[in-house]
Image 1 (tube, rainbow, N blue to C red):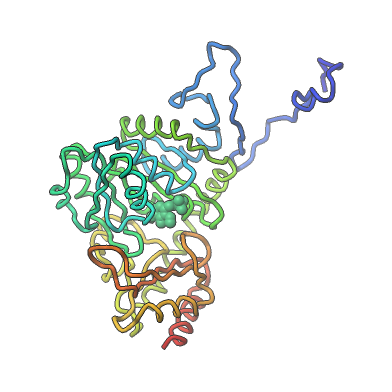
Image 2 (cartoon, rainbow, N blue to C red):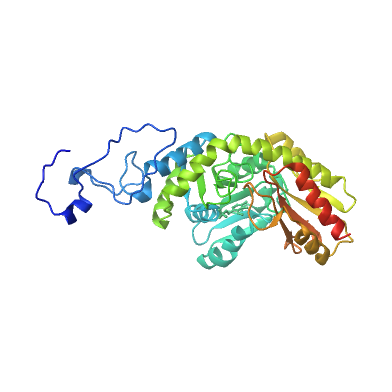
Length: 389
Ligand SMILES: Cc1ncc(COP(=O)(O)O)c(C=O)c1O
């Protein structure tokens, strides 16, 4: 220990310690860096710059947040990525980066509910019109593109009703009209659907689901494929102050290391459960992208390299809302709750969905399959079906 300042008071030494541990520590996992202030040696070097390679303020990146952003962007084949406080924050960031008063955006009517609520309850008041479209529209989207359309959203498969979209056809049509396409790629965990190879301009994920993988963080990413999108998203990210916790980023980095094994296992178990349900007389439709009942199944076969853990079941027309409710409440291993992508199996019943098509009259249940043994999950579904028979 060298003591250059033996006379300094202990109060001063609390914030300017005269000892320091060696930083020469080589672990397998990235360090968790906390920090708002970034220190500079000279006034001339001090800057407030989100674009720079170096660090200038915690909001624009720490080694931990940048490590996560870089790894996700690399996995997705993106030009750059930004970490945000959650999937919904990612959605808001994309709208605010691309749309101004007087602009028009297109959103599949099957999009994640709060995406549509953001449009109706907040963006409408800012003079931004968000029009919904049939997710199966494909290149027919050309008829909806207006002179002032600034953004087209895709979300594939759709929330609850699982329609798989023809994203390449929508991208081709949008680009012909000079409109960028944003994709909610959460279902594919950024890896089962190659968004940037298929032409998408901006891709977002709720890392809350598969990357986090354990239902213990809320985090999101926005990845960009073009310099223009990078500039828009980066500048807006800074202005909105979308800071994230390095601890949450560290959990997401840990989640990435086991993402492949979890996805493999989840896909296998989910398919087993979905096929079992398909053979049940109570079930009218199994809306799983890998099963032919699912609208857009052929597109899933063409564009995806796998399926994930969330899918829906539509019961026979004789089922009313009470029976569907009784069924989900009779489940024991499947717990009642929103979200998906974690280790636990979940179920949720939905009222008739506010959609022009495929609203399913309150006969729909969404399941998220976890890491439990498939036979036990099937036994749970079977006992619940028996209870409401
Ligand atoms: C498809 C989809 N996108 C975005 C989100 C929002 O993610 P978060 O809960 O991290 O805000 C969700 C959450 O359920 C989702 O299902």
